[in-house]
Image 1: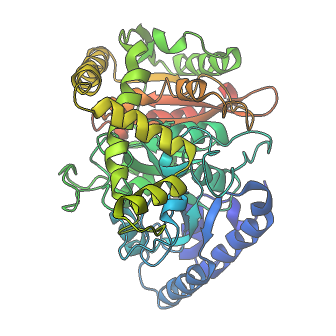
Image 2 (image 1 turned 60 degrees about the vertical axis):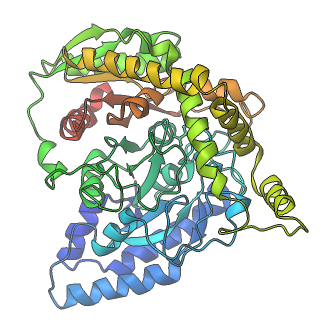
Length: 480
Ligand code: GLN
């Protein structure tokens, strides 16, 4: 690793800024240089906001010159997934149907980042409307995995994870409905957290499945993840599902003692897993045993239903949420003599194949006569899945699993087979169905040098414990 600023985590940049050893402008220029060098190959960004980023950096530098206090994120370049609304900056969800849509307001998370002095460097590529696990379903082309350009970066937040892995951005925000922060974090070798449902506001996140969606951090390491979570979490009256809880500093938990911790290994999550992935996780467990952490096997008996339940609920909610894109209020409009003709033409042209597939599946599952058999049934099984987790958490504090059953796959490998793409979400979707938090952190690499992610799943509001265990694992170098 060279000594360029773009390689540093945010807290190192923060301390250099405070000591006036570098300027915020240097930080932004370093990331711009890196983006210009890397983007032609990686394609992590849909929109770059260099002009405003440089202007924002100069404003921070003025504050520093006057010895005014700065927050941990002041002057730190961050990339934002393009389904999070940014005032005055086109927000596309990687879909033609939103082309030209410029939000008149900032999402709450964006407002909080701006208030903390963070600098938006651009909007990142994603699967259209966050439907996917590979970043191949984007109308702006596929993002490539920075570790090997023949491989996918994961999805749907593949642009965000690739922008951090390639050091084009210091930090990034993604969204996770069924694994879209954790799986790309795993594929790109970075840290990605899906927080407890309700601790990060969804106001201004273009909805995919409202009962599952959460915004969360993608970062180079666990400390940065805690710092970014500090900035974006907390009650928001604009989000009806926002949880009221006192402000927490998650960096305080990092050094907590984990020696008496009990960790559960759900046996169902290790069946049918790629050999190298399994070995990598087992190796970390060995390292944890050496720290006197107790590891016991647990069972999540309804795991086999997680994928069907998730895809019924996610597609149903998506079909309803996407009904608003009809050519009237947002983005694309294809003219026609009749109103219905205009709707039809706009939606036919604006949505990609995967979005259409999900709208059709969801509309079917919600249609009268089928609602009880599909959506309602899925909601009932969702409760059983949550009960499995509650039972497990009565015995252990946290669970460790792989994030994805396989290492990154090749570009094009699964695009013709949606079912095999859906099955790759098997280890992540349950945390969205329960609403509980989960993180992916980098583990050992495969023989070919592709990243493998380890997932830590916790109970309701257990971010502090999750981050602490993740931080200790990060330090277990010889086992990684
Ligand atoms: N891969 C999952 C899906 O396609 C999850 C997507 C997400 O979390 N946004 O639905």
